[in-house]
Amino acid sequence: MSTQGRVVVSETELFDHLADANVGEAEFGVLVNNNKISMKFHRGTQASLIVAFHGAVDRTKRKLPSFPAFIGQAVVQASQLMIADPSLEQSPTLTASWYLGHSGFELQRLLPPLLGNIIATLGVSRSVFLGTSAGGFAALYYSWHVPGSVAVALNPQTDLARHYRRRLDEYREACWPNLTSAESLLSAVDCNLTTLYSKGFSNTVVYLQNSMDLFHMKVHFAPFLASIGKDFDRLITKVDFWGGFGHSHIPGSEWVRWVAASLAAPTTSTHDILAEYRKDRTTPSTFGEISLQEDLEIAERLNRVP
Image (cartoon, rainbow, N blue to C red; front, side, top):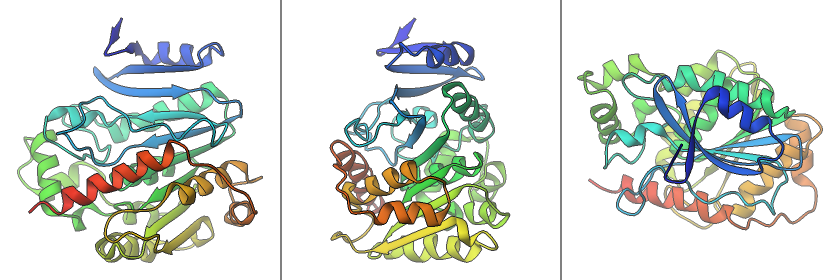
């Protein structure tokens, strides 16, 4: 059956669809532990996959499940999987839930094996996890669980205990109503990427940060950088000013180039990705600049709300 144009399938049925080379583009509502995760899939011509996580959603303009625009098939030839955060459906006003899950649906435990099975089913040799802001948190978190993958994160949050408390409280009240404090939430879900990455990591991270997003520079970027130990050789950082102040404006011409380099490099070593990035080429951004820029603009507006 279908819901809002999306075919509702079990995990096994999803894998069957993805294994069918005749399925070029489709939208799925995947039933996992009696909950539905909405996904949009586009099959590429290369043995690689981009997994994209959206950021904050303006609920006055967008109904869920809803996806930002595709990166654009003209940009890269990888297959693309866009995932809508299922926990946003717990409240009509909730704007961000960082793909943390909700009561009765431990997404952080359930999604990594599902993604691993999707990668295995598609037979891809390179996977890139992409996200902005709250989606950047998810890209970093889920890429960590896939050795050899690459996370391309734009102005991400990295430690939600340091983030705007009102946003964390909104998420807790909507998704974990039995938890009465931020402290209890922090013990129920994994909100701290600095702790996670300090344990070591076998993925590669491309961390793009707007230098004039001073809050994220101080509260999220600096602690994450300080947490990295022996695995510094798996981290690429670029801090720059691309013309926008605050939590916004990393243009598609920038992040698409990093995604393309992460896919085209012979290995996922930082040396090879950087060498590919430095090559003189022009990568059109098509739809991509619209989608992730919109994510950041929404997050910036929401963060200004008292």
